[in-house]
Length: 239
Image (cartoon, rainbow, N blue to C red; front, side, top):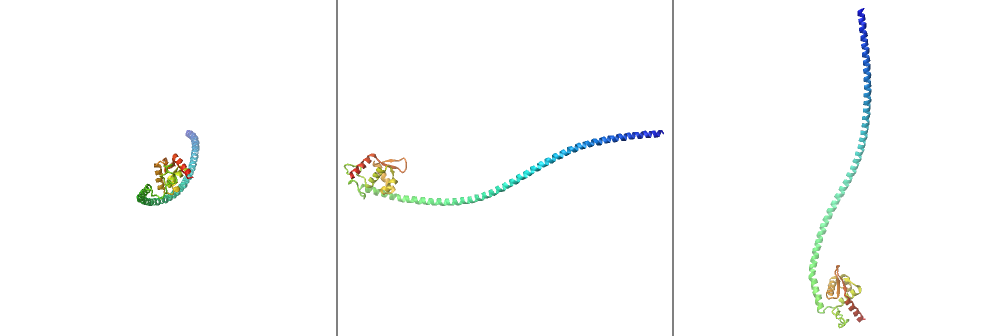
C-alpha cells in the first residue's frame, strides 16, 4: 500500500513536471513563434526594401543603357562626320599641293618676265638718252619742225613767250583753260608720249612757266598767274 502511494505520488510529481514542462515548452514555442514572426516581418521588410532597390537599380541600368545607346549613336554620327572631314581634308591637301606647284610655276614665270622686263628697260635706257639728246639739240639749234610763235606774238611785247614751241604753247594754253593737270592728262592733248610730256612739263616748270603740286604722284602742273595774263594778251593779239 505504501508502495502504491509512493508510486502515485511519483506519478503525480511526474505529471506535474510533465505539465510544467509542457507549459514551459508551449510558452517557449509561443515566444519562438513571436520572435519568428518579428524576424519574418523584418525579413519581409528587408526583402521589400531590397526589391525596391533592385527595381531602382534596374531602372537606373535601363536609363544608363539608353544613354549608352544614345552616346553610341552620336559617336557613330561623329565618326561619319570625321571620316567625311578626313576625305575633305585629303582633297584640300591635294588641292593645296596643286596650288603650291602652280604658284611655284607662276613665280618662275614672273621671275622670267621680270628679268626680261629689266633687260628691255636696260636696253631702252640708251635709246631714251639718245632721243633726249637729239631733242635737246633740235631745240637748241632750232631744227625742230615745230614753228616758233614769234610771228604770232611780237617779241617786243611778249618776250616771255617767244622761245616757246607750238607744242609748249598748246600745253600752256590747255592748262590755262582747264586748270591743274598731270602729264598723263595732257599727253593726248599735245599728242606726245607720256615720257616726252613729263619731260616737257618739267622743262616748263624749271623755266618758270608753271607751278607744280608735289603732294601726290603724278605731279600736277598749273600755269602761273602772270603767264595766264600773257596768254590772254596773246589771244587778244591774234584776234
